[in-house]
Length: 612
Image 1 (cartoon, rainbow, N blue to C red):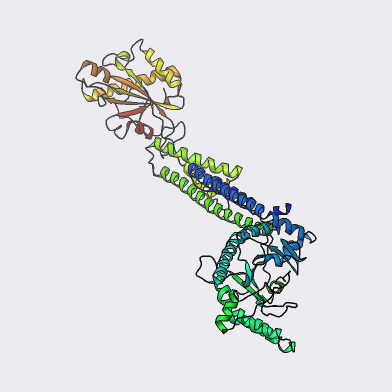
Image 2 (image 1 turned 180 degrees about the vertical axis):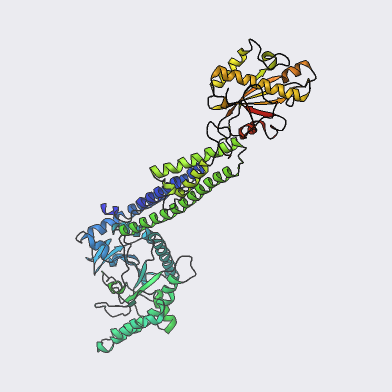
């Protein structure tokens, strides 16, 4: 029974298909993890059911065919292993099987090797499919070469009983063909005594070909062969009687036997008849047999009683010899071809999945690039979020370039390399907005007396704290701005605010040693109140000096002067506007306008000392 392990590796192919399906599903296909698990469970359940059903079916076939296969193995023990698959093997079913498988006349056999073929007996038509499956595995995956349906009309009480038996045989052959995956060729062997004379060396008459045998004209060759023996017989009347009886039984066979096996009134698939043979051999035949009744109905003459032929009866070897051999492919080669087909299908599905994944990657990064380009520079928080997405995309593509592209993006579909320059360009185009200026507000009343621009004694404590903050930002320029309340006329207030800003600037320069070129002063007078001037508290808040630390590098695309050169155009002060120190008045530059806005210069002036 170890030979039953041969044949097509169905379970291995199911495992291979399952592994490929799960690999493509989890690694490549663009599906969610939850959907992938649902599909994986379905695939594994189908594979498990297929393996269990196949195993149970195979075990059932082996158990029910155990005796037949044991007999087959014992009978063919002397045959080389290669002949098991190359030598024709025929399943014999139907009537009078003991007479066919009893060569010694005493012990019946289940299998017979001889006459150029292996003959396996199937007593129960319902077991034909299971025996065929077991034989296929025993022969290394090759199905039986055909079925021989033995018919002895004399054993049936009437045509109805014979027709019912033929329909049952047709259904069994159809089931076996379906389970084996191939249409089993069917040969019909009719054992009927045709003459009442003693039978000597019975001879087969029939036809066999690859095409289905259903046309009466195809049987004329068999009748001509029988008629050709009449002149050679001399005074022997047996050949003439046999030729006449053969012409009658051929018509009966076409009407009763072939009609039942190939007609379309049944639900089962018609049999693939490839050969039909008649022989003057069989059981005793009397006037009650179906064929005798047919002869009586056609000729009004009842055939005489005929004696039984001695056993064993010959097997229809001429029909098997004339049947064309079907092409056979080793199950291992078939499994290899199927494995290649499975790999090709998995590769095609993986390529499609990789293309979809790459399309999603391009769309994802393209959406990030589009979002970044659509955000105006003024919305820096949103631009930073979009920039982080671009940096993450660029880093991901860099990892792919260094460590290798993941399998889900491979299969020749990866197009991420072309996106790296675009991402780098977009990332490099980002310019951070200017940092907000540092503002130090000083109370004028604590620094100056009313209407004065000279620092009060002891007022430098607040300036010392401001000086410490300036020292913490050595990269920034210092703008000193003066403000007043609305008491007095506007011109006097403007001059007073400029003078107070200059006084603070001068103290800071003297105390810190910072180059005067880093300072600028500006006076606003009473034009920039931060509280109402109708109360003492409000006017006190409006009398102030502000020290503003401004970034030295402009953030907008402006012309940038050398590091120690101010970014504004110098103009000379008119006579009478000198603050008492050597000074030059400047038009506010870009960095100043950026802090104070477009309205920073019409009602105020700014100056920057060039040194003592």
